[in-house]
Image (cartoon, rainbow, N blue to C red; front, side):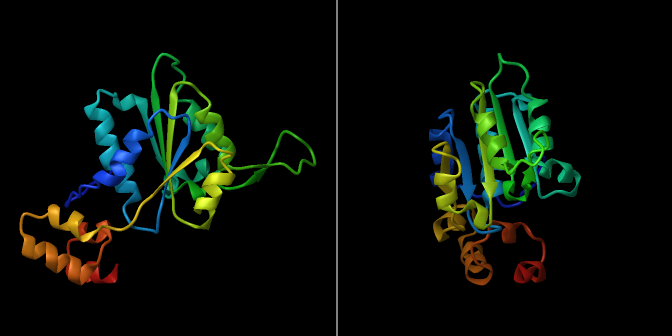
Length: 206
């Protein structure tokens, strides 16, 4: 899963939260409104942090459920099978990163006839986080990922990092041309995605 960014923002407040929560045996859930920078935080900043700390790329499993080529992994059982196919070596520490986890569907348990038990992404994530060598991180955008859900549905094993849009200081610090930074903040707002679009028409649309 590759993402390209023209303008790079420091989001140290949130990045440090992720770093502090590493290996705490909980599912790290990054929440926030759409386009506020959840994917950038996880798949750019935190990913680079792991690499800089000698984590190998094959130890980092990334997946975006928003992508068309990931449609089959919206089935929680297929998702579980896919992730587990990359984490079989018990001598390695793995980091699992899933973008837009709310796209994962709820299905009936196929192994019990007339079962009223649903299988959800919660089951998959809790199963993964129980493994001694697996650290789990996800992003989520809609009502399924409200703070109350993180606290209750994960049964004490969810740890939320709530991300806000860019602050002025975060935008200001990312530009060498401070006048341009102020103009961008005033005209186009606080969403990181906007600053990586090429034309003003695209930025105004966002």
